[in-house]
Every structure is written in structure tokens, then in C-alpha cells.
Image (cartoon, rainbow, N blue to C red; front, side):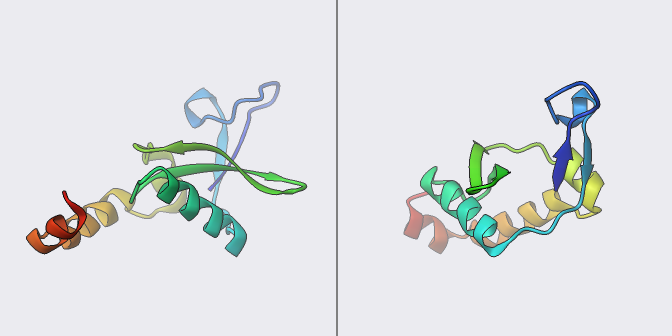
Length: 100
């Protein structure tokens, strides 16, 4: 998802009037987002990336990302996907392997 600030503002937050649209990510952006989440020991994260001239830059890693904007923009039930992932992985065997 790409967010754009409203006219006259630099903040692209949707609750501050920013607009969002669906965007494709590059393999490099995917790799850097996964690496950022893993560095923070997160299985699920929202990673804010700035598309800079020198390549993608991680601006923020959110352990508890807001989903309303991205679900509305993409039409994908991300919360449901997260719950199904947790249900698949929250087994005794998985918890023993990971110490959880």
C-alpha cells in the first residue's frame, strides 16, 4: 500500500487525511521488510518503507500494525489471515520449538 499526504501536509497518515492506494512491491522491498521484521524478532509486523533514490529505506517497524487502512485499500482480510496463521502455528510442538 502506498500512502500520500493531503495537500499542504507532509504526513501521510490516513487518519490525518492521507490517501492510500494498492502498490506492488519489488523483490528488494520485500526482502528488506522481512529482514527488518526478523531483526526485531517479529513474525508479524508493519514495515514502513521509503522509496528513496538510493533504494528502499526502512522508516519504522510496527509490532502491532493498524490494519483498517490496508484492509480497506486492498480488500484483503489481513486480520483473518493472521488469525489463521496463529491457529496453524500455535501447536504444542511449535511452542516447544520456539520456547513460546
